[in-house]
Length: 251
Image (cartoon, rainbow, N blue to C red; front, side, top):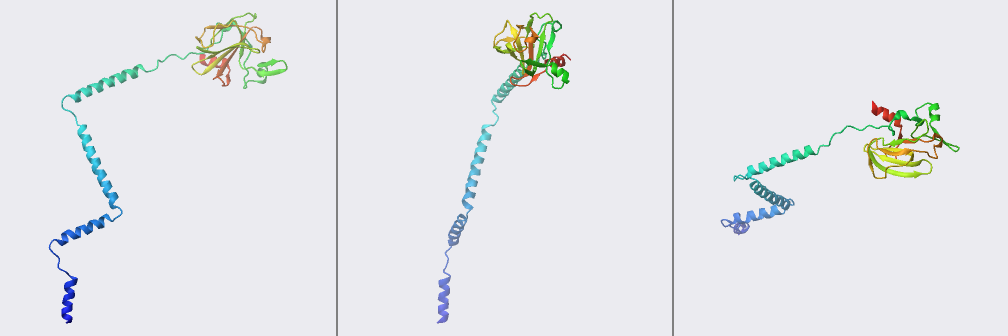
């Protein structure tokens, strides 16, 4: 009886497998196991994206293939013409090189005038500094320009020291009539103690053009008829000694 039972148990534990059962059941189980992995879906997505990119590259390469109907030669000819045009435009766009304009004194003849009041130079001796102080009432201030006057105290023409644009024309109660000219190099020349102004704000002047006549002002009344000439580095920049600047350019 036990032997029979054993035989029965063996038959129940190992049922007969039909032909082809393994080929249908095992792959199905393996696929489900594969899909249960966390990296399965990302890997499938990346593979699909790679395939799509490869297809796009293939179509682009086909679109860029060289035509055989003469279009390539005409395209090269157009490219050559465009290159020539670009070269010509670059040549034409080159800036015109001109000689740098040097600064002159604001008078036609420097030998006809003398320095009535020098520029206050911080590096000069104490004696020179004292001679360059402007006294107004009980106040002494450093002189920021150079005053030029004739020995006979007669009026004379005041000219533009450099070419530029007139940016200021005004009357000041202390320094008198004043003209400022802005130049392309960033400098500003200032002319004070003027009379008979011949230019207006916004006008363009050339180096040597007459802009006014020397006159008098309240601040430097002891100088008589003169022109106060001043050079600044920009609108609100520091003042520069005109004498040293002109002598440097003359070298």
